[in-house]
Image (cartoon, rainbow, N blue to C red; front, side, top):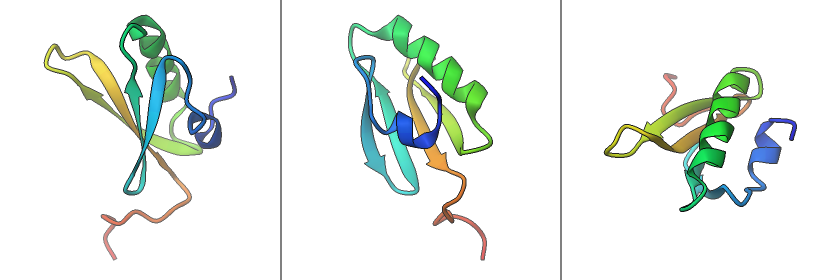
Length: 80
């Protein structure tokens, strides 16, 4: 899968997508921990050009969500 913002929006068996202000939240689906970990590493490595990413962790400090925001859109929290 080519990692760009649009393809991430499609979701997959390992993760779901929730619309969020200024981007989307990718969340790990139960039973797909290993596949999500692989995806998270790929998304983090691919960030910077088309999109920015923030990894979010659960109580055990495992990445279970990714906030992904397209670079081309102005952010609501950006200084004016």
